[in-house]
Length: 454
Image (cartoon, rainbow, N blue to C red; front, side):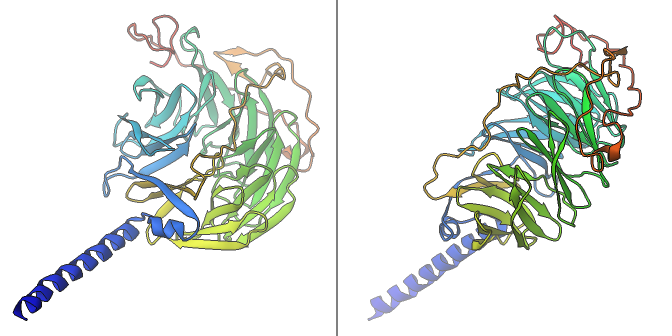
């Protein structure tokens, strides 16, 4: 009798402690923003992995993050960039750049390099190793992160200049492009296979050559742009602060269609297949035909698009609740209460749901059975369509381009440039600053032993 009573006295406290410990662990997971496997499975999802971003909670935070070629690139305000495998969660490399006390902007990437800005210095980092290849001061005050094409890096400045620097090793020392625009550029440029696109707070969208200098056309709107443009060949999508979404043909300069949501848009539109998803501050998630702009459905309460699969759309509300919607009509399918401050990546490249907590917890979820990611964006080859000659509105290295203007696009005059000439006017670009070559090194950006970035 005594032995049985004594055994119960020992066992019940142990079981209670185990239950309390499990509850505390579960509570800690929820408060940290970690989606449990049970939560995920209840709505048909699986948590593929979770990892920790290189942030020191309370001292630093994530500035921006992007998905590029199945790799998450994360930049913090402490001047740290981290590359994480988007399929496994393994960290490929972590690199400290610049001064932690200076603001950091970016990242942007091509197949070889990752570009970031710290203060007024541009850093180009080898994508394979994370080694800083080149750093150089930029000509003006950076207004946003850089953009990289195959052969150039573009830096937007608050003065309206877009500076372009060639990446080829045989480029002349100090060679660079200048694109002048109206207003300040506070959004990273968009690079397509052969175009560079940027917006300004004066309500202009510009399209120029990414590999051959020359502004092709511009779009004038009624309000500034604070959301990144989006691209699906051949259309460029841009959303303004007055709730207008524009679809512009990148080659012809014509306005394909315009959508009016009536509320500001702060996040980039997302193009997935034949659909375009636009989140407004109403809040409302709009789904339209990407080619025609025809309305398909809208769901109130959703303030951010996160990702889409063959059957579902995933979005967030203002309380960080994850909503699962039917992709055909927007009907609700399920939801997850995150119970933590979570941000989602606007992912229109794959069917993966990437989440990050304010303390730097990164996690990836996918639908059960979808062990391999579905890619919506194939790496496009450069367009074979020949580029038009540069106009006399461009000046590189102090030399005007050939004064042969391209034909004006057949744009709608009431909506593109208000009926004005879509190729101008532009202010005279600044002259290139003198460049002092650094000591000999093996970086790929200089001519021979000279580095145009120093």
